[in-house]
Length: 315
Length: 260
Image 1 (cartoon, each protein chain N blue to C red):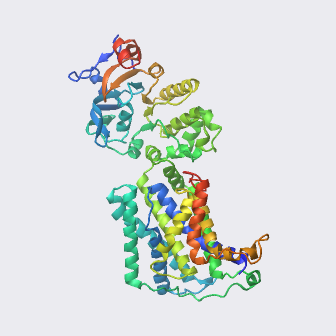
Image 2: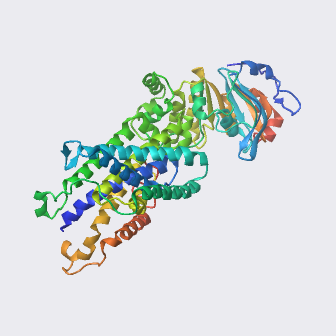
Image 3: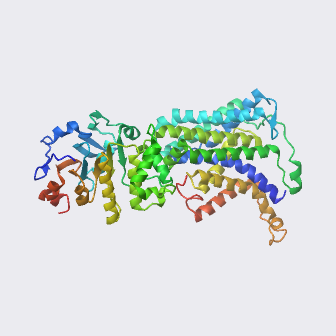
């Protein structure tokens, strides 16, 4: 595979990481809560879509190699993830009334519960969406890029969601209230913002995006009860790299971490891709160490910019 | 302006005497009676009674830790009174949440962190009006007219403002709701003397718009200088009350509390 090919894969994987990172950062900044159940919220989205797609099937036409039914399943996945997260907030986190460390530990327990329920129903094995696998797009193959139209759909959908969130944050009343709350929760209440309501919307949006990320992760790889949890630490790395609490930082961090993750195989072929390095040279590290590399990069960036790429509090 | 307390000396409050101006409290726009309040287990206010009449400026002075800011926080629902009542136009609002009290007609300007730094000036004002039913654009334009210093910077992030400009924006944000009571915590804190004078002038101007003001101020001379009445707080309760002249001229008050 060429450098372009790795970059293309990185773009697809980044799209998924970005969707996960935004919600984690959003909930952190507005609800002051590092939610360890966020990864499993992605899993919930993926399996909800799996069930829906199994039930409704193709529904006629298709876009980018994906039947209409898949997009319906995507919407259901987003909705179920949002409803489960809001329900958990209302039934467990909010009544608990404990500090942020207590919430963090509780959310680890919630993550186990989400995963257990999925595993009881679907088993621990890998599974796939029932969409027909596609061959890589023909005209890109000469450039060494092997992406399918499904991959294009993932990137395009993620872009739509990210732009939609940007518009919401910058130009709507709810978005301004969310930014005001992230900036200064006390002043938000003093100004008359009903913060509990805004918090619930934050959960809806954050978990909804996670649900979408989960569906795309299932399409990109496959589904398993551990799929979201396995990604959680990488998503945390992305969020912290971007500057925790900053939505735009989470986007940047998610993009970088996703790219780094997929570019890892290039390390063993440095000589081929870099001009001044002897051809045979390479650092023999495989893709199985991609997560470790992502964390090394995160630590390196934090040494230079302790508050992450976007600095502090800049939602 | 009300001119009721014309006693030549400040009135001393003892624990066993009823407040001398209790009669006025009946028409008060805001009245705290027998309030105990504090943070967690720590009591700060101890049987505190004071009131604010329509259109007045009232200044709370006293040593650090006397509970001046706590009075404002309790009146605004950020703290729930343990005992006693907080009445707004005769209705008990003690323990109501701040976001609901704003809707009643009380505004609050905190001492620090009183603007949304990452939001623009325009957005700060919009946040000040989230509880309005309508007329938001009109009232924001009126405020821009009144405070040209922020009009020039509508699209700038609030964190780029100077200390004085920030204080003006903080007032304006609270005024978007057109409150008839404004609680202001140390408007001159951290400002250069000239800027502080401008801010006090703004406080007076806000008062001229028929907004009664209950203000905490470290700068006793200037704070009392623009006020109709003052209360001297110590250890969570009112020790003296009276007109600014009476308080400033009272020997005991100045020696004990106003730094001689």
